[in-house]
Length: 396
Image 1: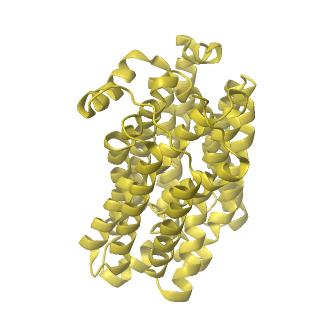
Image 2: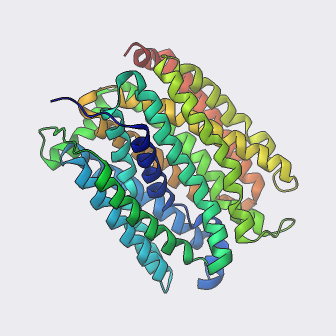
Image 3: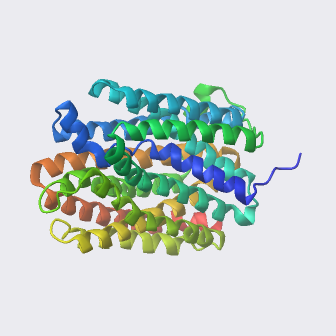
């Protein structure tokens, strides 16, 4: 049977779905101070919403994303999107923090549909264009993460913080219908039971050193990303800025420029030059904290730092993901699930550290932690080079 290929329009629809799914975990970030005021929460308690989103997404990646190697993927994708939509509706109607946590957790679990769409896109693409397809889908993911903040801020300004959840639920439901109509049926069964399928994810970590190194690098990169973005709303809501939800959300537009790195990283991967993209990304990840160190007093420095940080994270992530899903074509979904689980665990750690450090020592503590994580990521890359893990993946 001939493998179906993807049209440019369908790739863009899939990228939109990836963006909307992942965005559903980030609407709360620019609204944390408004939610805290309504429910009478401390900074750390409000931050638990973001931590819940990251942890539930990580759990979904481990427990649900591998189902892409077990069930027919179009039906699975549509079903997961509809359940994530239900979680958004619960969040929109939440009368208290516990209900908001429930809605956030439900949405986080099933928004891992994004990580079924990405390996499906890779599997259905022409091998010569696979890196570009993954880059486009990951560009949709980063745009979803970043523009979620802008959309949430503007929506909250017009209709309160709950309005973004209503709008997102409608968009998710419409996109699920479009995917049902547009996606081809695709089923590549792994020939394993569900327990064996989950166990095989852990076995892949044992058998593939490239997966271990790239997962650790992804974890550190996204830890840095969340370390910055989670406490940003609190920084911008106080002196000297006193910005509204809408203005805080607009910072997502500055970070969205980093999504432009996705296509470039994908092209580098297609040419076997992803090591170059990783080196640039990790160095930029560290250097971005220099302007961010002046974010408390300089808006220009803050914007420059956002641009550099998001560019770096996207470069590292796309290069990592291309390396990981190319290891074993028959296990793309499970490889991707293992990598992205580590990635979002890093995000949960960054979110938790961000709120704790900001409440403890303010923005200076955030900057010091960001620099330390950036240095650690460079050391891990250097260690991987010495072990030959990166060279091994280039040969593949």
